Image (cartoon, rainbow over all chains, first blue to last red):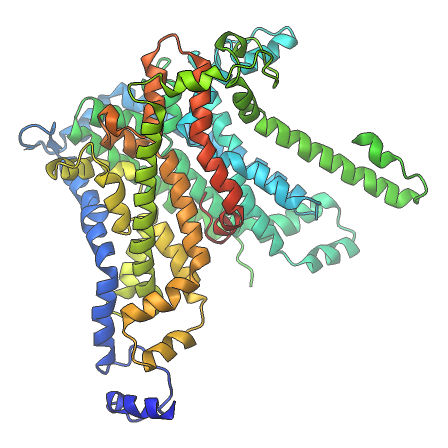
Length: 322
Length: 291
């Protein structure tokens, strides 16, 4: 071992204050970092290529295309703000926005409330926790698939499972997915159904709350409601915040379910025309790439805006203890 | 079930009420679980029912057992269903290999090496996790069209090899940071270069993170519809989700029996991976928080 150290000694000679420890001085500014630079850029080479051609590059390119008129055939023409001006008068875009907003702001709070409620029940040392957790988590893995969307289309169809069950009670249900007033709610139900993923995160968070807080509160005579609002909720706010940001971002990008349930149209009467579905129709149905790019940037602004507002607001309600 | 736990009467009042409370919790949890899973179970059972019965029978027992749905569904489209399964398998395998190679390389650099711009690049990498694919899909499509890659599997696999799933880089960075540095240092003193250190030490020690990456990549790519719908344009290249979608479109009078049968086939592998990889899945979500 000492022979090895001596072999290395010349390399480190430029920093005489360093005792010859078998640790490399990281970022010491003496020849060594340069070699690491090269090695690091080598390891990052695929990622750099991905950044240029798949993520950041296309992100900037789509900003450029949003100021052009381009249908894939022929050249793109610079049209300035025309695509953005068209958005102001596009009534389908407006319904896409309102459908998506309703979906996000109804389904995400419901989903998180259910996730938290079940996590709290499961956190009380229930026997068979792992089994329950798996069962509740399963829909999260399947929820985004075409097969589940197909199932939903049948279950909420005019003669689907729900209406068969309602018929037992003598109720004649409507065709949920084919009625403009109800179609969106079936997709909200689908999103709430996938509450398992945030539930698992809540469970992990609940584990972190020291038991002694509850014991101390119980000694002081605090009831269950009191303990929930004054211990569980404040201690869990970072996790609630995390889940909220994540699920809002996810919900804004919902596509598959709406596409399959409406057969790609966003119908009936645009009641399930999600933002991404309309973007797909403009970009890959009508090949109006300029307009689709402008829509993409509006989506980025909306998601970025909501995330930023969330982060700013978090200062007032998220409690980071030590 | 309810009668079973009422039996022991010799216990004190207190533990008895405690037991009843626990029993009620279990009854509630099981009942809720059944409601959650009922649509799935019903689809499985309905895939063995004649189509007419699917619309009459909300129960779980296929009274007139019809395995023919599977053979009918298998051959209902232009190609037999195993053609689409094979396509999906190729895409998924490519995506897994790509993610394992590309993301672990990037993760090693971020977790272990010092280089100029590290903080900036790391921040950019984290930001790309939140980048919706819909925002970059148009220029990607234009690029892949110019490379003549539309209707091939390249647009679905090459981006993975280029480590564009930042989520997995982050997962592996967290994991590698948790490994002791001593081994790396020892290997370095023994004269190993970075490539050998990477292949011999952090990579094999990161098996749990690699397994989590493989499982999530499998499930997400297998279920992915948006990019496969856009990049795969002719039926011989269709993957399972895109093929299922044409199934819905092709028949205005949808034959739900065969359609359900093929949906069950499509969900099968995900369910299998879920059973096999539960441990990694739960840990993966708990530590990083994405479904």
